[in-house]
Image (tube, rainbow, N blue to C red):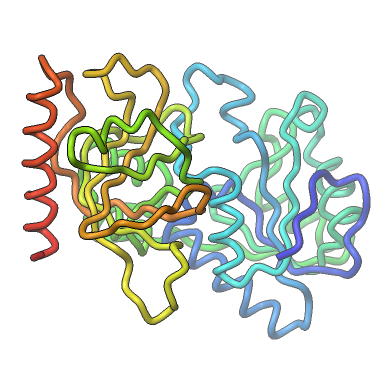
Length: 310
């Protein structure tokens, strides 16, 4: 997938476009992207996404901004897997936030992205003070030569599929509901880095990943599945148990994802792996001693093995 940063130069050819933050790329986003792909095949135009970095709510109120479900890299990977051919990432800064709705349409959608057809969520608002809406897009599109369609809300059970709903499910430790909203287990990707080797000393060697989600959408101990270790497409992900948090027992302050893979003994430092959270086992907690921590890790590993029927 081709990625553009900023909108100063036009893309090579006209596009069919979807716009959104796409945090988590949940089932509502997936339905929008499916419609994007169908429109691209019908029209022969390039299926393209416009997204923003940082999230607009991070720009306007960082202290109260929601937890990121996906890093930019994770989001781009998921968009590519959904069939998006190119993505433009607009820097959401003071200059961009000051664009009027009309300027956004003319400068970004028309001049830079050369939009011929636009597909948006039914709640999409844009431009300075969120003054732009579907009606304005239709009116200006008729004048400038692009069509507009809105994607209706996707409901899972009795709940609207949204990034906020996924965050609520993760915060509650309901990994099954989060997976229903996402269409897949929730996961994080990262590079395996060297740690303090404490897990190995306790009898549970771990692959350590520095996590860039800040703040975290959840913490705790989880049964997980891991892929990205050079396995063939036909091989199943490897099961394990993981701690996501700051490791309060050893005075940790920096977020770390520690994964212990069952019946696995390979050097994987430097590998970029995907960790999928299947079931929450417990909250992260502080223990009185390393011996107490070691006993709890053994219990967590047993619980995860039982979940996977190992």
